[in-house]
Image (cartoon, rainbow, N blue to C red; front, side):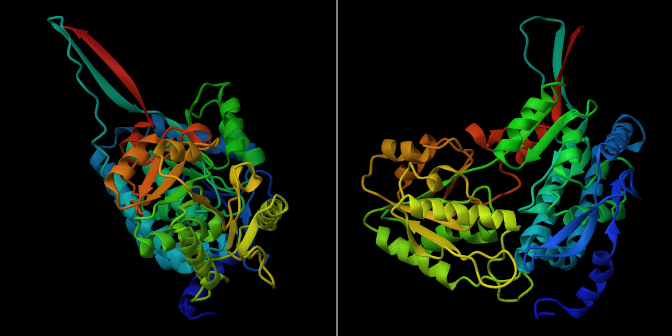
Length: 497
């Protein structure tokens, strides 16, 4: 097909793509109760290329019951932590061995360039799983001091139980495997409902879970639509915890639905992240860093630096540099070897993003570059830079989730005022600072209300670093110690000796 795809890889995945996939429950492939299927569309062509099972409430119930049985009895609850770690390592090895296949399928399923899908989606996932394996056996309690003699108190960290995970379509395989790894490391069992737009990565993951020898019922995967499958998972009385990554609107509904059973909830939601470039910044790094923070994965990134604030001394230079990158980026199908940015996920998403661009133009924004879709089939949109934007514009206040950046000059050096600009949003997921001045960096980072502040490129989504947001960007944290402990309950034990 293309130089980036070897013929044997195409041949190996042909049978995978040709069949209607089943649900993965209790380590078995089962038909959905409804007998219905999801048509999976390749966003680079707009055409159906695969089919997945459309699970419903009855299938979710079956999966939850399998997860509960595995949590309460059998090998999983009595398995030594080191053996859990070995299973996660086996899963990581299986992911690494299948990296080419994962990259190929994800590129068709999501639209991202295959190399990005392979290295970030597969090899990066294997690395993250190995990190999570290291937590097995290290989830410990404490011994609080007490002034009373002949008394002892200590705490234990128990796994929360059955976890319901709902994942988005923008980085499907990586996010699905992250939630699997964290659940296994904490000793929980899991029911995963992936996004209906990108179900194939989760199906691949289920196959690898089976290959790794993970006990029945520990990991269950039900593909299907948000309603009924996702709804049934959130409302199920035997689910102890929901971990959700997706839109703020859906996150708010989950909070309301979870209230009926008071199940624990972790939410990683939307963002409207600011990027600040100061005049002393290393512009050779800052310009591509600012550009790709919003153009990578066609801007379908929750931490996209979509509000670009640049000091007036270097504003023209930065906007010219970011616009130049936007012009040079090769937009095309993910399987083309020179593609740097793929399509948006769907026709609906394309209409949403172009609608925001038109809204910006109506309110007075200037389109410096881009602004329109690419001719031909598929859901391609050219990377777009908007200037002459201001805080009251819709494009400045709402999450676009596309390759659109709004550039504005900063005309003072007052960090309190700059922080006020950063915090002038209902979101608080991420922020970016580019400056060589250590004082500016530390002072501003403390003032910004965001879960993550990346400085001069930062560390990216490192598995050891907790990730989550302030305000309407979510509740709780994933990854790192915080992510593991979010899947536990603290039990206090007091003894009179």
